Length: 254
Ligand SMILES: Nc1nc2c(c(=O)[nH]1)N[C@H]1C(S)=C(S)[C@@H](COP(=O)(O)O)O[C@H]1N2
Ligand SMILES: [Mo]
View 1: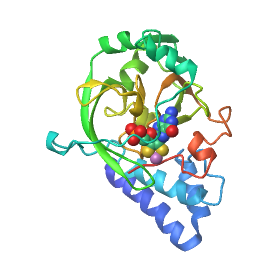
View 2 (view 1 turned 30 degrees about the vertical axis):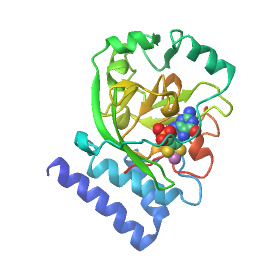
View 3 (view 1 turned 180 degrees about the horizontal axis):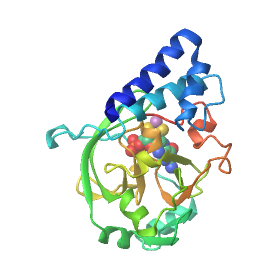
């Protein structure tokens, strides 16, 4: 049996079980394949599990759609105002020369990178949609270093399951996480550039994670920390994301 056929059978099995015996039973099957998202416990949990398991089994390496240059939005929409906190504005005044991205957790060689160091790594660009769960979206060209490049440099340990990323503690510190499929995906970028220039502070400059296979809230702005882990229990309320600690889904695949 081909790998794709096997995946289709597993997913069909999960979906059929969901129809006949309920989502909870489907979730038990997904669990056997290690496809339980960290927010599977709530009332929407079984549904979240079905979406996540189906995406990962049927289209594990799918690419977010890349668009032609003519589709770039004239006026990209920044959601929220740039931070006014001293901890941010003092760094901004200094051209973000002291901004550091720290990479730690289940890695062989923990490290810390300045923006200048990140810019020296092989760069990748993509023209993709950023879609907010609230309905609006815009298209931009994003430039950065693939997260996979940095993870390969620091050496992820075999038991790693997630990469957690978080913003500078500006008012409410925001964190989120992706599984290794999205972390190592070629389109997942540590992004420092937008539309040919530096990433504007309104859009997360100097650094944001760009996760084009998921909704906008997974693309956390102002990132300073990456933590490789095998469990999301120790972060926030344990659902893998400040959005999921609220009312949103941890997995926001599109
Ligand atoms: N640090 C931080 N990151 C964030 C947010 C935020 O408020 N703070 N908002 C998120 C949400 S809900 C969306 S839709 C996108 C919006 O990106 P934009 O400002 O480039 O439009 O950023 C995400 N990343
Ligand atoms: Mo959003």
